[in-house]
Image (cartoon, rainbow, N blue to C red; front, side):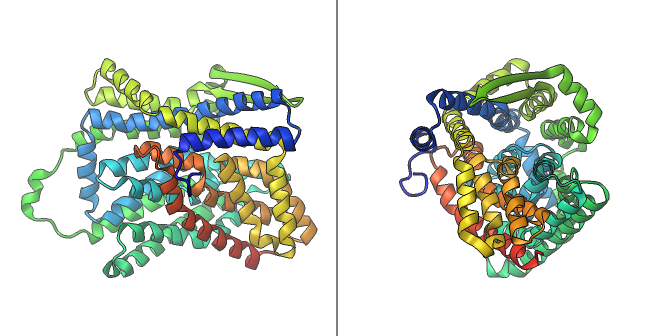
Length: 487
């Protein structure tokens, strides 16, 4: 419906939800009561944290527009380099990767896409490069949660080994994705040698830092440290390759105090995310213990729980950083609340889309549909299964919008097939994680976040069409890595 009939995302998602409910009732004997509770469960998962993060990520950007500090950020990025490739790579691969490593759940798509729009880039381009960059870092996103989740599913205690296998399978993609991003930014033949070299340097640094982070620190840090290293390299590259400025441009320089003030919103958000992350486990546990709101539902004789940890929730942290940052930038509390109200009202279609999609994936999971799809693909591919193992991870992320959820859905399946064909369970578990990073590119949830951030609601199909070839290429590369370097 999105790709061919060009039906808007909210209507497509709602019709798909109704269709899925009917199929689960007629084909999988899923009761009406279970369907209703699954929709409620899905709506709760959509609200906390996904919709809340979408609202607050866009709100943080709107605060910068209201306080007119976006103009200072534009100047700052131009000051690093006037090269658009440097600007885009810094925002998406660098800053976006850091957000994914710390928080996940859509922040790494929404915030870079919104800033790119503010810098004058076209909406569809901003959405596409933000989606592409939010692939590789998700393997270790939200401080390593996807790898930890699949390790639990397959009963694998050696996280360093599993994490290093994930990094190894991602090697070509860490080089290719930065190149695709800069090529999309500047596809001229003249820029090609520069783009290739830049991609090799940035991707190479990401590979080395992520690998040694896994081995010597743990699976919590590769995406974070890899992104920080990339940011440093990109900034240095931008400074070294920047054309010499005329002396007259010095008058246009902005004071350090104004620059710090302009970064108040995003700086505070980053500090809050890092300070409440699992890197500071005891403090995080304390905050969660005093702010937890568990909601339990019994579906099909199984208790399902949505736990809302208000003080460590990504959406709350974005809200807090935006309000405090906005106050520091001179806005009144009343003006900030009015801006929040306008942001909430502007995303009405997004709420329908995200709730429908999460409810849809919840019904598919709990009724057994997803397991049937994964098993069917495993059975159909036979001896060539390792070639298609990442595709199963991709399927999981496409349906659920989450690398972690994909690993929970298909982790045991991957380990079971690995034992049958004489492959290491950890290798195919890593393949599931890597495949899920590719599925994030075209996950309807990710696309909805991108369209919302770029104010392109209703054009989800256009973005899906642009992103799909890259996602297919991504999964093919991952499949070849898994097939030829396994056992």
